[in-house]
Image (cartoon, rainbow, N blue to C red; front, side, top):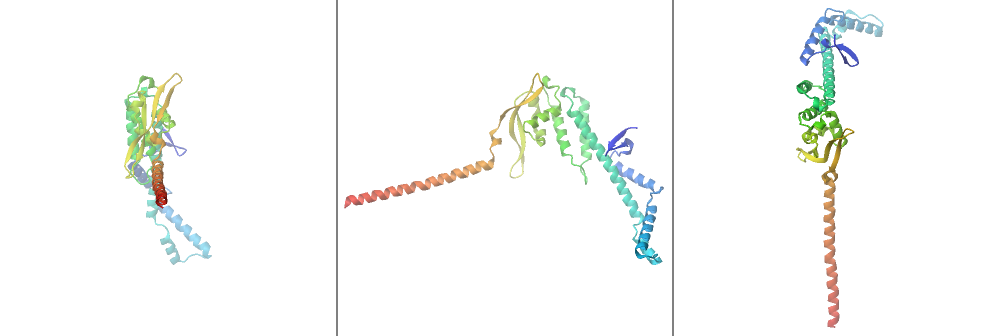
Length: 292
């Protein structure tokens, strides 16, 4: 029997639901089977009623009357509510097993594909990528679903890399190593799916792109640095050819420089007329002296 490790516990694969609907069906069957065991809701109801009676007797130092017993009986949680809670608990537990199982399979498959050389790709590789996409889609769209943004980014990046043509000398390079070299050159992980992997794997000087947003919220790709992939005797390397100056200067600093230059021009313009006025006054004085 095949076993799977979930939450540090080995669980048989036949006990793991195949979908959310299957989890609900298994939870219903499990709750129905418990009706014929000691864990049935009627047994739990009577145990809760006896506990309430004993607790009331201990706090009041005498046995409750028949009227008080009826009140304690009505205050005890009814068997239907207990049955509903048991079904919800079973369904929640099975859904947790299903989610963890799918997450483990997705991550394991992504690690395997990320370590596979480009020259070893085949039809089964793209079938595996399609299965991963289906499992990620199943884990989305419901309340309390896990965050799969990181897995989506890796899936899109690996699919783009494996679909791109490459030079033979880069055939032994796995996708995970390509992503690692890009990140070492200053590229962030969310920008990995937007790179020109066709140019990178051809050994050409290729521009890296970064996702940016305008003031109105519209997103666009702006050029970052220029890199080149190379294969040498010691292995593969990605060299940083040049940096774009637009990345080093920021818009606020440019605006401050423009404002400062405007202030200097205003000050210089305001000083020049004062000098001219003084010169004119001196000339007038000298002329008056000559007239006398």
